[in-house]
Image (cartoon, helix red, strand yellow):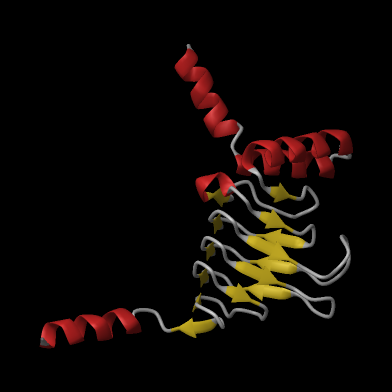
Length: 170
């Protein structure tokens, strides 16, 4: 019995589910419930996950999204994976036009920062990967891998293939 309760809590009360439920409560016009769920998420997971964001049901917060901070003007697509301490920040007021848009099938590594501004939004293209610790302040084309500081695109497999070839020569 205790095991079933624990499994229920683990699958339905994780950070991503609480965030999704707070978003749905906000859409339904139940602002007190949305604020309560956001507060629970903050106190349990130390994450600031705004209920005004547009998120999908299948969002995955790895390590329960510990320390994540997400601005209200963010749209997150399907099958997106966010690691811990990710920051999605913008200089705009909630509800304004510029948005940070993360399209489907993206992965954002731990401690990555995506900074929007008040002039135009930022779009992280479909299937892109943002490496751990990367700071992004421009659009990312679909299927790109962005790493390091300053952020720069890396061609898939190029670094690995060169390293492997160098090791085989020695």
